[in-house]
Image 1 (spheres, rainbow, N blue to C red):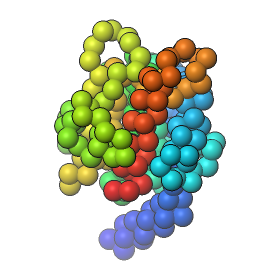
Image 2 (cartoon, rainbow, N blue to C red; image 1 turned 60 degrees about the vertical axis):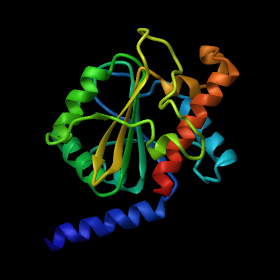
Image 3 (cartoon, rainbow, N blue to C red; image 1 turned 90 degrees about the vertical axis):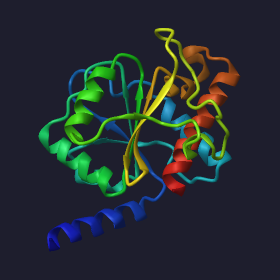
Length: 214
């Protein structure tokens, strides 16, 4: 019990020291965890300029088994294919999320069945639930009354946002059939119209705001 208490104190101190920092998760399985290389830097720049954050411009890359995971209150996973977590990563990610960390998963297309499988290993007792359009993450600082916006077309399916919750607090956000990261990338990468990129960046800012404010 004493050791467990100390570990949570360390976790809290780590989050406090890096209160506004984010990390990109490197995972195994063959999926391209490194997809959308300009997306997070652009999102960070947008947030620093528009919602008052002071995030380091270049996010760190981290593996889930690393003890440094607990230094970052916000971590991001993206990619197109297979995702595999080993046992140490499963245990570390569970501890991280239950201890106050936040995970955003953005399906870049093709990772749905794999990320659902692995997150079920992290939380066997939980299921992803679709997030209500009235949730705070869709309200501040930018209003999205229709919920998660559609940014990039894949299979002509509606965009969806799913979540895992601890005591009604969103601890994992899974954005599906929207591809926010494509909208965060440099304009010339996907040639998205300015209004689509703005919409994606604003939704990303809402996610960042939710994590750091609530």
